[in-house]
Image (cartoon, rainbow, N blue to C red; front, side, top):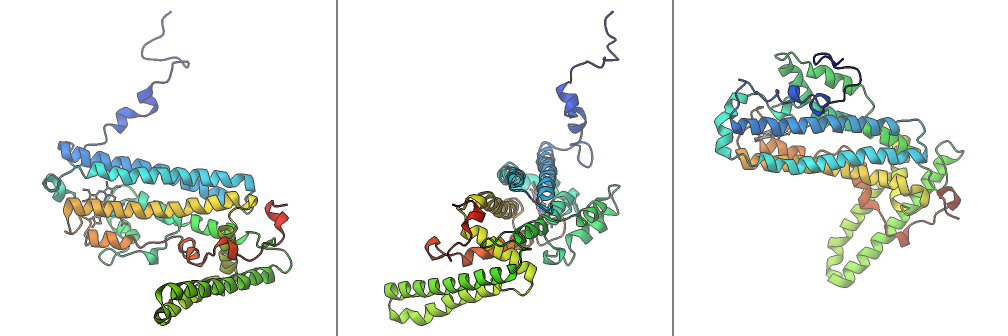
Length: 364
Ligand code: HEM
Protein backbone atom coordinates (compact mmCIF):
# COMPACT_ATOMS: atom_id res chain seq x y z
CA UNK A 1 0.00 0.00 0.00
CA UNK A 2 1.43 3.50 -0.86
CA UNK A 3 2.39 5.64 2.16
CA UNK A 4 0.00 8.45 3.07
CA UNK A 5 1.32 11.82 1.75
CA UNK A 6 0.33 13.55 5.03
CA UNK A 7 2.10 11.12 7.35
CA UNK A 8 5.66 10.42 6.18
CA UNK A 9 7.04 7.21 7.65
CA UNK A 10 9.99 7.20 10.06
CA UNK A 11 12.37 6.40 7.20
CA UNK A 12 11.44 9.45 5.10
CA UNK A 13 14.62 11.20 3.90
CA UNK A 14 15.54 14.57 5.39
CA UNK A 15 14.73 17.59 3.25
CA UNK A 16 17.18 20.48 2.91
CA UNK A 17 14.71 23.28 3.71
CA UNK A 18 13.27 21.44 6.71
CA UNK A 19 16.68 20.63 8.12
CA UNK A 20 17.69 24.32 7.90
CA UNK A 21 14.25 25.62 8.94
CA UNK A 22 14.36 27.77 5.81
CA UNK A 23 10.66 28.64 5.58
CA UNK A 24 10.81 30.13 9.10
CA UNK A 25 14.21 31.76 8.58
CA UNK A 26 13.21 33.38 5.29
CA UNK A 27 10.04 34.78 6.84
CA UNK A 28 12.02 36.88 9.35
CA UNK A 29 12.96 39.87 7.18
CA UNK A 30 9.77 41.90 7.52
CA UNK A 31 11.28 44.75 9.56
CA UNK A 32 8.91 46.98 11.51
CA UNK A 33 5.98 47.09 9.07
CA UNK A 34 6.27 43.76 7.26
CA UNK A 35 6.97 45.51 3.98
CA UNK A 36 10.61 46.61 3.77
CA UNK A 37 11.88 48.43 0.69
CA UNK A 38 14.60 46.58 -1.29
CA UNK A 39 17.27 48.73 0.44
CA UNK A 40 15.83 48.01 3.85
CA UNK A 41 15.72 44.29 3.03
CA UNK A 42 19.43 44.58 2.24
CA UNK A 43 20.02 46.34 5.58
CA UNK A 44 18.10 43.70 7.54
CA UNK A 45 19.70 40.70 5.85
CA UNK A 46 23.25 42.02 6.31
CA UNK A 47 22.59 42.54 10.02
CA UNK A 48 20.97 39.14 10.42
CA UNK A 49 23.91 37.46 8.68
CA UNK A 50 26.27 39.09 11.20
CA UNK A 51 24.12 37.97 14.12
CA UNK A 52 24.20 34.38 12.85
CA UNK A 53 27.99 34.55 12.71
CA UNK A 54 28.01 35.97 16.26
CA UNK A 55 26.00 32.95 17.39
CA UNK A 56 28.67 30.65 15.98
CA UNK A 57 31.45 32.79 17.46
CA UNK A 58 29.86 32.44 20.90
CA UNK A 59 29.59 28.68 20.61
CA UNK A 60 33.23 28.34 19.49
CA UNK A 61 34.52 30.68 22.19
CA UNK A 62 32.73 28.67 24.85
CA UNK A 63 34.27 25.44 23.56
CA UNK A 64 37.74 27.01 23.58
CA UNK A 65 37.18 28.45 27.04
CA UNK A 66 35.94 25.10 28.42
CA UNK A 67 39.14 23.33 27.33
CA UNK A 68 41.37 26.15 28.53
CA UNK A 69 39.64 26.51 31.89
CA UNK A 70 40.33 22.89 32.90
CA UNK A 71 42.47 22.59 36.03
CA UNK A 72 44.92 20.56 33.96
CA UNK A 73 45.17 21.00 30.18
CA UNK A 74 47.07 18.05 28.71
CA UNK A 75 49.44 18.96 25.85
CA UNK A 76 47.33 17.06 23.32
CA UNK A 77 44.24 19.16 24.18
CA UNK A 78 45.86 22.51 23.32
CA UNK A 79 45.22 22.01 19.56
CA UNK A 80 41.47 21.98 20.31
CA UNK A 81 41.68 25.44 21.85
CA UNK A 82 43.70 26.66 18.87
CA UNK A 83 41.19 25.08 16.50
CA UNK A 84 38.12 26.77 18.04
CA UNK A 85 39.72 30.20 18.37
CA UNK A 86 41.19 29.81 14.88
CA UNK A 87 37.67 29.28 13.55
CA UNK A 88 36.48 32.41 15.35
CA UNK A 89 39.33 34.33 13.70
CA UNK A 90 38.29 33.18 10.22
CA UNK A 91 34.66 34.15 10.94
CA UNK A 92 35.68 37.60 12.20
CA UNK A 93 37.87 38.13 9.13
CA UNK A 94 34.88 37.21 7.03
CA UNK A 95 32.69 39.65 9.01
CA UNK A 96 35.22 42.42 8.38
CA UNK A 97 34.89 41.77 4.62
CA UNK A 98 31.12 41.59 4.94
CA UNK A 99 30.94 45.31 5.78
CA UNK A 100 31.63 45.92 2.08
CA UNK A 101 28.16 44.49 1.36
CA UNK A 102 26.63 47.03 3.77
CA UNK A 103 28.58 49.81 2.09
CA UNK A 104 26.71 49.31 -1.16
CA UNK A 105 23.92 51.24 0.57
CA UNK A 106 24.31 54.88 -0.58
CA UNK A 107 23.85 57.50 2.18
CA UNK A 108 20.64 58.93 0.74
CA UNK A 109 19.06 55.51 0.28
CA UNK A 110 19.76 54.79 3.96
CA UNK A 111 18.28 58.15 4.99
CA UNK A 112 15.04 57.09 3.28
CA UNK A 113 14.28 54.63 6.11
CA UNK A 114 16.81 55.43 8.86
CA UNK A 115 14.62 57.61 11.07
CA UNK A 116 12.02 54.96 11.70
CA UNK A 117 14.67 52.73 13.32
CA UNK A 118 15.49 55.24 16.08
CA UNK A 119 16.43 54.41 18.85
CA UNK A 120 17.18 50.82 17.75
CA UNK A 121 20.90 50.38 17.07
CA UNK A 122 23.73 47.84 16.82
CA UNK A 123 24.52 49.18 20.29
CA UNK A 124 21.81 46.78 21.39
CA UNK A 125 23.48 43.73 19.82
CA UNK A 126 23.38 41.61 22.95
CA UNK A 127 25.35 38.90 21.15
CA UNK A 128 28.32 41.21 20.53
CA UNK A 129 28.14 42.19 24.21
CA UNK A 130 28.19 38.51 25.12
CA UNK A 131 31.27 38.00 22.96
CA UNK A 132 32.96 40.91 24.73
CA UNK A 133 31.99 39.61 28.19
CA UNK A 134 33.10 36.08 27.36
CA UNK A 135 36.46 37.37 26.15
CA UNK A 136 36.85 39.25 29.43
CA UNK A 137 36.24 42.91 28.58
CA UNK A 138 35.39 44.60 31.87
CA UNK A 139 32.40 46.90 32.13
CA UNK A 140 34.50 49.65 33.73
CA UNK A 141 36.85 49.61 30.73
CA UNK A 142 34.07 50.37 28.26
CA UNK A 143 33.43 53.71 26.64
CA UNK A 144 30.07 54.98 27.87
CA UNK A 145 27.50 55.97 25.26
CA UNK A 146 25.93 59.25 26.33
CA UNK A 147 27.01 58.43 29.89
CA UNK A 148 25.33 54.99 29.80
CA UNK A 149 27.30 51.73 29.66
CA UNK A 150 26.08 49.10 27.18
CA UNK A 151 24.68 46.70 29.76
CA UNK A 152 22.65 49.36 31.56
CA UNK A 153 21.45 50.49 28.15
CA UNK A 154 20.31 46.98 27.22
CA UNK A 155 18.61 46.69 30.61
CA UNK A 156 16.75 49.98 29.98
CA UNK A 157 15.65 49.37 26.39
CA UNK A 158 14.90 45.73 27.16
CA UNK A 159 11.92 46.83 29.22
CA UNK A 160 10.02 47.62 26.02
CA UNK A 161 10.84 44.24 24.41
CA UNK A 162 9.34 40.82 25.15
CA UNK A 163 12.82 39.31 24.87
CA UNK A 164 15.00 39.46 28.00
CA UNK A 165 18.40 40.28 26.51
CA UNK A 166 19.63 41.55 29.85
CA UNK A 167 19.09 38.15 31.50
CA UNK A 168 21.38 36.64 28.85
CA UNK A 169 24.07 39.17 29.63
CA UNK A 170 23.74 38.54 33.35
CA UNK A 171 24.08 34.79 32.80
CA UNK A 172 27.19 35.36 30.66
CA UNK A 173 28.67 37.53 33.41
CA UNK A 174 28.68 34.46 35.65
CA UNK A 175 30.84 32.44 33.25
CA UNK A 176 34.62 32.04 33.33
CA UNK A 177 36.10 34.43 30.77
CA UNK A 178 38.65 33.43 28.15
CA UNK A 179 40.97 36.02 29.66
CA UNK A 180 40.84 34.41 33.14
CA UNK A 181 41.18 30.90 31.73
CA UNK A 182 44.23 32.01 29.72
CA UNK A 183 45.75 33.69 32.76
CA UNK A 184 45.38 30.54 34.89
CA UNK A 185 46.85 28.39 32.15
CA UNK A 186 49.82 30.75 31.63
CA UNK A 187 50.44 30.73 35.37
CA UNK A 188 51.13 26.98 35.17
CA UNK A 189 53.84 27.28 32.47
CA UNK A 190 57.04 25.51 33.53
CA UNK A 191 59.75 28.19 33.79
CA UNK A 192 63.37 27.05 33.48
CA UNK A 193 61.99 23.58 34.20
CA UNK A 194 60.22 24.60 37.40
CA UNK A 195 56.47 24.03 37.78
CA UNK A 196 54.19 26.15 39.91
CA UNK A 197 53.99 23.75 42.85
CA UNK A 198 57.64 22.69 42.84
CA UNK A 199 59.63 23.59 45.97
CA UNK A 200 61.61 26.77 45.35
CA UNK A 201 59.51 27.75 42.32
CA UNK A 202 59.25 31.41 43.37
CA UNK A 203 63.02 31.65 43.51
CA UNK A 204 63.39 30.09 40.05
CA UNK A 205 60.82 32.50 38.57
CA UNK A 206 62.41 35.55 40.19
CA UNK A 207 65.87 34.36 39.16
CA UNK A 208 64.74 33.99 35.56
CA UNK A 209 63.11 37.44 35.54
CA UNK A 210 66.18 39.11 37.12
CA UNK A 211 68.47 37.48 34.56
CA UNK A 212 66.10 38.38 31.74
CA UNK A 213 65.87 42.03 32.82
CA UNK A 214 69.64 42.18 33.02
CA UNK A 215 69.76 41.08 29.39
CA UNK A 216 67.13 43.69 28.48
CA UNK A 217 69.42 46.31 30.02
CA UNK A 218 72.42 44.97 28.04
CA UNK A 219 70.34 44.94 24.86
CA UNK A 220 69.29 48.55 25.52
CA UNK A 221 72.95 49.58 25.90
CA UNK A 222 73.79 47.81 22.66
CA UNK A 223 70.90 49.54 20.86
CA UNK A 224 71.96 52.92 22.23
CA UNK A 225 75.57 52.39 21.12
CA UNK A 226 74.33 51.49 17.62
CA UNK A 227 72.10 54.57 17.44
CA UNK A 228 74.83 56.91 18.65
CA UNK A 229 77.31 55.40 16.16
CA UNK A 230 74.80 55.91 13.33
CA UNK A 231 73.32 59.31 14.30
CA UNK A 232 76.18 60.98 16.15
CA UNK A 233 77.07 61.62 19.82
CA UNK A 234 74.69 64.60 19.84
CA UNK A 235 71.70 62.23 19.76
CA UNK A 236 72.70 60.35 22.94
CA UNK A 237 70.83 62.67 25.33
CA UNK A 238 67.64 62.25 23.32
CA UNK A 239 67.88 58.45 22.91
CA UNK A 240 69.05 57.48 26.39
CA UNK A 241 65.76 58.29 28.21
CA UNK A 242 63.80 56.31 25.59
CA UNK A 243 65.98 53.24 26.08
CA UNK A 244 65.72 53.65 29.84
CA UNK A 245 61.96 53.90 29.55
CA UNK A 246 61.81 50.51 27.77
CA UNK A 247 63.76 48.94 30.64
CA UNK A 248 61.59 50.66 33.28
CA UNK A 249 58.42 49.49 31.52
CA UNK A 250 59.76 45.92 31.31
CA UNK A 251 60.58 45.99 35.04
CA UNK A 252 57.17 47.33 35.95
CA UNK A 253 55.46 44.72 33.81
CA UNK A 254 57.48 41.68 34.89
CA UNK A 255 58.10 42.46 38.55
CA UNK A 256 54.47 43.20 39.40
CA UNK A 257 53.84 42.53 43.08
CA UNK A 258 50.86 40.19 42.69
CA UNK A 259 52.62 36.79 42.61
CA UNK A 260 49.96 35.06 40.52
CA UNK A 261 50.06 37.76 37.87
CA UNK A 262 53.87 37.79 37.98
CA UNK A 263 54.00 34.05 37.35
CA UNK A 264 51.50 34.27 34.48
CA UNK A 265 53.52 37.08 32.86
CA UNK A 266 56.76 35.15 33.35
CA UNK A 267 55.04 32.15 31.70
CA UNK A 268 53.97 34.27 28.77
CA UNK A 269 57.47 35.72 28.41
CA UNK A 270 58.95 32.23 28.58
CA UNK A 271 56.68 30.84 25.86
CA UNK A 272 57.28 33.86 23.60
CA UNK A 273 61.06 33.75 24.16
CA UNK A 274 61.73 30.03 23.72
CA UNK A 275 59.15 29.53 20.98
CA UNK A 276 61.12 26.92 19.09
CA UNK A 277 61.22 24.35 21.94
CA UNK A 278 59.21 21.24 20.97
CA UNK A 279 57.05 21.32 24.09
CA UNK A 280 56.21 24.99 23.62
CA UNK A 281 55.13 24.57 19.99
CA UNK A 282 51.41 24.37 20.76
CA UNK A 283 51.41 26.88 23.62
CA UNK A 284 53.04 29.44 21.36
CA UNK A 285 50.44 28.78 18.63
CA UNK A 286 47.74 29.27 21.22
CA UNK A 287 49.17 32.66 22.19
CA UNK A 288 49.47 33.65 18.50
CA UNK A 289 45.84 32.66 17.94
CA UNK A 290 44.60 34.77 20.86
CA UNK A 291 46.66 37.74 19.66
CA UNK A 292 45.00 37.32 16.28
CA UNK A 293 41.60 37.10 17.95
CA UNK A 294 42.12 40.48 19.60
CA UNK A 295 43.51 41.88 16.36
CA UNK A 296 40.44 40.69 14.42
CA UNK A 297 38.10 42.24 17.01
CA UNK A 298 39.92 45.55 16.59
CA UNK A 299 39.82 45.29 12.80
CA UNK A 300 36.10 44.54 13.07
CA UNK A 301 35.52 47.68 15.15
CA UNK A 302 37.65 49.80 12.89
CA UNK A 303 36.06 48.48 9.68
CA UNK A 304 32.57 49.03 11.09
CA UNK A 305 33.51 52.62 12.02
CA UNK A 306 34.88 53.34 8.52
CA UNK A 307 31.74 51.87 6.94
CA UNK A 308 29.56 53.99 9.24
CA UNK A 309 31.56 57.11 8.37
CA UNK A 310 31.02 56.40 4.69
CA UNK A 311 27.27 55.90 5.06
CA UNK A 312 26.26 58.51 7.68
CA UNK A 313 29.33 60.72 8.00
CA UNK A 314 29.85 62.21 11.46
CA UNK A 315 26.21 62.53 12.46
CA UNK A 316 24.89 60.95 15.67
CA UNK A 317 23.86 57.29 15.77
CA UNK A 318 20.28 56.01 15.98
CA UNK A 319 21.29 54.73 19.45
CA UNK A 320 22.11 58.31 20.46
CA UNK A 321 25.92 58.12 20.55
CA UNK A 322 28.26 60.60 18.89
CA UNK A 323 28.46 58.00 16.10
CA UNK A 324 31.88 57.52 14.50
CA UNK A 325 33.58 59.41 17.32
CA UNK A 326 32.18 56.88 19.83
CA UNK A 327 33.00 53.90 17.61
CA UNK A 328 36.61 55.05 17.13
CA UNK A 329 37.06 55.21 20.90
CA UNK A 330 36.09 51.52 21.16
CA UNK A 331 39.05 50.60 18.93
CA UNK A 332 41.26 51.25 21.97
CA UNK A 333 39.77 48.23 23.83
CA UNK A 334 42.33 45.60 24.79
CA UNK A 335 41.08 42.47 26.54
CA UNK A 336 44.49 40.81 26.54
CA UNK A 337 46.82 43.78 27.16
CA UNK A 338 49.64 41.57 28.48
CA UNK A 339 49.90 39.75 25.15
CA UNK A 340 50.69 43.12 23.54
CA UNK A 341 52.88 44.56 26.30
CA UNK A 342 55.17 41.53 26.38
CA UNK A 343 56.17 42.28 22.79
CA UNK A 344 58.04 45.41 23.87
CA UNK A 345 60.21 43.36 26.24
CA UNK A 346 61.28 40.55 23.86
CA UNK A 347 64.97 39.97 23.13
CA UNK A 348 66.81 38.64 20.08
CA UNK A 349 67.37 34.87 20.51
CA UNK A 350 71.14 35.30 20.89
CA UNK A 351 70.59 37.47 23.98
CA UNK A 352 68.20 35.16 25.85
CA UNK A 353 69.22 33.72 29.23
CA UNK A 354 70.52 30.15 28.82
CA UNK A 355 67.77 27.54 28.98
CA UNK A 356 67.96 25.29 32.07
CA UNK A 357 66.60 21.74 32.43
CA UNK A 358 66.21 21.42 28.67
CA UNK A 359 64.85 17.87 28.94
CA UNK A 360 61.63 19.32 30.42
CA UNK A 361 60.89 20.97 27.06
CA UNK A 362 61.54 17.97 24.84
CA UNK A 363 65.20 18.88 24.07
CA UNK A 364 67.97 16.27 24.49
C1 HEM B 1 24.46 51.53 7.44
C2 HEM B 1 24.83 50.65 8.32
C3 HEM B 1 25.23 50.96 9.73
C4 HEM B 1 25.32 52.15 10.39
C5 HEM B 1 25.04 53.54 9.84
C6 HEM B 1 25.72 51.87 11.75
C7 HEM B 1 25.92 52.83 12.72
C8 HEM B 1 26.26 52.59 14.02
C9 HEM B 1 26.46 53.59 15.03
C10 HEM B 1 26.38 55.08 14.80
C11 HEM B 1 26.73 52.96 16.19
C12 HEM B 1 26.99 53.61 17.55
C13 HEM B 1 25.79 53.46 18.44
C14 HEM B 1 24.68 54.39 18.05
O1 HEM B 1 24.71 55.57 18.41
O2 HEM B 1 23.75 53.93 17.35
C15 HEM B 1 26.74 51.55 15.92
C16 HEM B 1 27.00 50.56 16.83
C17 HEM B 1 27.08 49.24 16.52
N1 HEM B 1 26.82 48.65 15.31
FE1 HEM B 1 26.44 49.59 13.59
N2 HEM B 1 25.91 50.53 11.88
C18 HEM B 1 25.63 49.94 10.67
C19 HEM B 1 25.68 48.60 10.39
C20 HEM B 1 26.04 47.63 11.27
C21 HEM B 1 26.17 46.24 10.97
C22 HEM B 1 25.95 45.58 9.60
C23 HEM B 1 26.49 45.62 12.11
C24 HEM B 1 26.69 44.15 12.25
C25 HEM B 1 26.26 43.49 13.26
C26 HEM B 1 26.59 46.60 13.15
C27 HEM B 1 26.88 46.37 14.48
C28 HEM B 1 27.02 47.32 15.44
C29 HEM B 1 27.42 47.03 16.80
C30 HEM B 1 27.73 45.66 17.36
C31 HEM B 1 27.47 48.23 17.46
C32 HEM B 1 27.90 48.45 18.91
C33 HEM B 1 29.38 48.81 18.93
C34 HEM B 1 29.92 49.07 20.32
O3 HEM B 1 29.20 49.67 21.14
O4 HEM B 1 31.05 48.67 20.59
N3 HEM B 1 26.33 47.82 12.60
N4 HEM B 1 26.45 51.35 14.59
